[in-house]
Length: 378
Length: 226
Image (cartoon, rainbow over the protein chains, first blue to last red):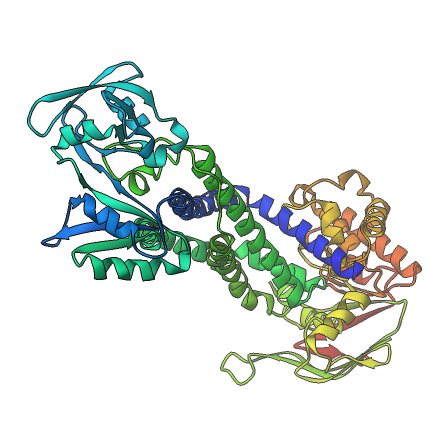
């Protein structure tokens, strides 16, 4: 065992000194390689972290939402629906919600307007998301005019700005009281946007949803798991799009790497001949080449992955944010909670390190099997 | 004792450019002697040397080293025999560029995986013995012709082989360095090494340390080699 370890150590030492001899070439390759890993890992990390974040946010969402559909479109529903849903067995609570979208011409952005439970009775005041505050230059105590459905202006006072920690979901939020909401959008009293339903037993959500459609045929129940799936597929789609774009870069790198790794220079061939002549076996030469491929690709992998981690979780994802983040004009500024999927890292590892190492070793096979006396004949 | 029995080496057999480099050579080399294979370029000296040193297999015939027939050994075993029995000094020195003299000397021992301190001490000792103690950290390409040749000798000795095989070792050396080389050969012989040299350099062939000079021409021995 000790002999085996010493042998590996000698070969690694020699490999490192070999790499150092062709410093410029290997550093350039390492840089390009690390950049490819960095780009791919950034997309994967960011998409995964966003997915993780959205799930964390949706964990507190109601198990079931009930909407009314008229002519295939979402419509307001009457107060009686809330009572009907609340009466279904297995439902622990049902609450009519008010929310909508408001297009703000000065900032040319869409805001999400909601009436949260704790804010139901408030009047003349509003709470705004950090993105809105930035877009309108508003601060607590400022007046905030909104154009109502009848063309008049409803002026509210900013009570607070939602802290940046929850900006992913709150950047474009306006929280107002019930009465102001109805005035703003001309929503008749006793009508709601949808019903948020709590179900005692999570396994019964589908059953409750079935009962809702039986009792209220024009209702559309939406379960939390369906929302999670929608978010997931949006993020998968977006990250898939970026990966496809990056695939071109990846392919270019594969060609460069293959060319570099497979084309042995005359100097390298001569070196292999010398090693064979002084007593190295074919397997020793191949071991050296395996280490050479592994050192380059592991270093590039480590640099790329750590760089991507810093880019996504410590930086503000400057390079990818415009593509992967933001679903309106207001881009939320937030820092993601570090969350890495080991399966994704392993996949990235097998897609980058393994092919490169193989590409380094295979062409050496022929060179390594030359007769050792070739050195004497040249 | 190294014994060659009716050994032939044919390159590109069966093709239009077929070449018989060694043609039916039988030769016995006694231990602790210096043997020189002498002959013009293309006479088959280098090919015969690589057969003796287990670097290549003969097309036909048998080679016996210390009573062991090595001709039919698989590559792994042949490499092992080569590594432990023979040390090689090549015409150009053939040091690996870009690495230090010390590492060049240690290279043949790497696959054996012996503890580093012992190997380091031995490699240093050899380089000091050959007056290269001050060049341990110098890269191979910075060495002069004579220094590179001595470093190659140190490399040939690092695995403590019984036999040293040298192919035209003085081809790039001047008279003074050639004489120095032969002094080293004398020292190695005194230590009990068997030395086989291919050379057409008269300084080498006529040196008193040489026990036997075997002439070669067209792949055959001039006269009786046995």
